[in-house]
Image: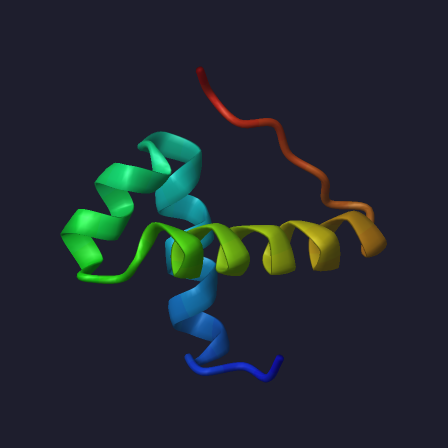
Length: 58
């Protein structure tokens, strides 16, 4: 599956999910929860490969 959004926007979504729930980000950005989750997972994998792993806030 290819990228549908800019790298900057995907990083913004990633950062938002660290602070809010996937559902909240989905509603705020008018994306489906699946889209938000896929973006988050893709960026998280990239950061892990680069040694920049992160944990989600509860």
